[in-house]
Length: 199
Image (cartoon, rainbow, N blue to C red; front, side, top):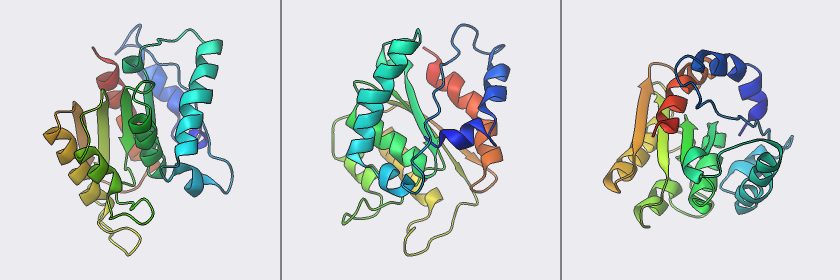
């Protein structure tokens, strides 16, 4: 998600260059998918149509144009903030397609419309474990709690981590000393890629 940011200020090309010496032969094909201008909220707020678009249009296009691994356990869907929520929703809706989630400062406080806050953690707590591995990161300064963000992003991510651990998921969890910042997310990408691509 937010491919314009990952390809721009976050410099994912430099991240991949640094990975060459760490994970030879396991470098990912990275596809940067930007949201439609003005439609980010509508697309990324656990929109089933967006999740279906990623699984049934984007992934088949990738497979048609690149030599990629077809096992969902070798495929990562990821993003930051709202994009991390969208990535999580896509994987939970299509675990047959996405076997790994990379969620950076995810908007897991979201209510999902009329539901209680932290809808994703509640949903995952109530269903059987899915074949998904997780890399979660969150800033220790992401503590703002306002009516539209209650609990805070930090608290909600900790809750999601605890739910995943209790359900037996494989989870990499990182807290960094910072806030909602591109530079922090870029710095954590190599470690997340190595974790999710290792077998």
